[in-house]
Each structure stands twice: as C-alpha cells, then as structure tokens.
Image 1 (cartoon, one colour):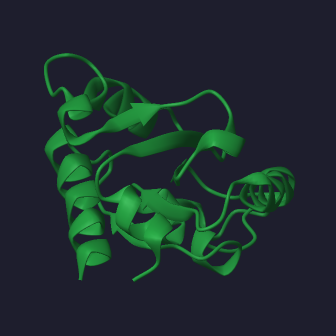
Image 2 (cartoon, one colour):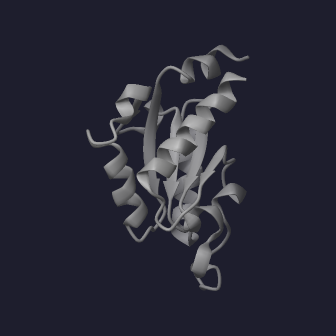
Length: 139
C-alpha cells in the first residue's frame, strides 16, 4: 500500500467544493463539523486550501462554469486526492439533469472514490461514507 494512503487513515484534511448546490448539503457538512458530531475524533479537519487537502468533498450539480473550476481544483490538490460526491445532485444530477446548464455528473469530471446519497444526506450518512472510505484505504 502507498505510504500516503496509509497516512490518510489516521488524519484526513478535507476541502469543500460547492458546485452550485442548493445549500442543504452544505448545511449538513457544516453540521458534521460541529462539536455535536465531532469528526475531529476521526482526524478529519476542514482546511481552507485545496493544496493542503487529502479529500475533496463535492456538493451540487456541475454546470458549465463549475465543471472547469472543479477540474482545476482537483489538479491543484496534492496527489493522491480522494473525491467524495455528497448528495443526489453530485452523484447523478437528480432533478437537474434536464436543465440546459447541466453537463455531466461529478464522476465524469474527476474520479470519485465514494458517494454519499441523500437529499440532503444526514450527518450520520456523511460520517459513514467517510469511515467506509477510510476502511477501503486500509485494505
């Protein structure tokens, strides 16, 4: 196993990339980071720069403007960078697929390592998705 991936199982720094979300997923991510759920006990910490991030949390529907920015963010992140698609919109577009501005799902723009379904996903589901991602790295 790659030493960098093994180190990720102990401490994950995440960066939140919002691709035109409705803010429900964003509120749930912020709820996960509060002391009530305390994800810092897993070593998860929100960082302000994608250059310091190990995991990219993507919410919302990629459109013509945000798809290029998402590619640029992924290119700037230190490798290996894992991407987690949070919510139905990031997973497949949900009800926005017939929109004129929708281009393609997140996994066709950047490689996605885990999906957290729900509209919006509960904080428990987000934690479970990240923990499953950590377990998959440990194998």
